[in-house]
Image (cartoon, rainbow, N blue to C red; front, top):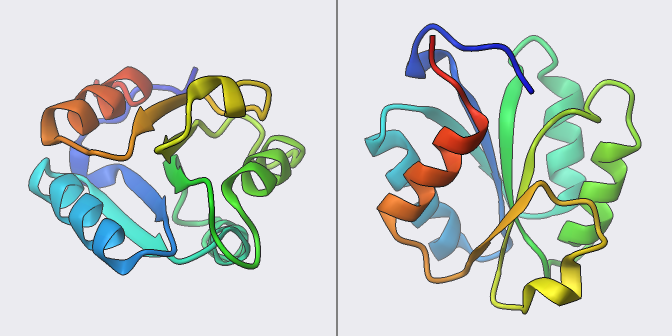
Length: 130
């Protein structure tokens, strides 16, 4: 588990989805909840963001599964195998059945029909405010 954070504005969340409409929706919900977030369109860009912004630590990643270049399963396996990021919670956002991704290494999963209350609940499960 990650240590508690003093304020929502200190929380950085990364959104990974190849569909811009999904990124915009999730981004706006997370920002409305008071958190910071960035978004990228595939797993390769997510890894680059994680590496480039080590001084801006992401505390949570929400990722789509089916994306070009690097999909969500490849992304979570790369994250979990990295000494720098192995403890980073990664939440799958998918229309697939959980059984199809259960062994991939995700911390949790959400259905693709995203509601603000569901997103807020998921964030609160993984990010503890002091």
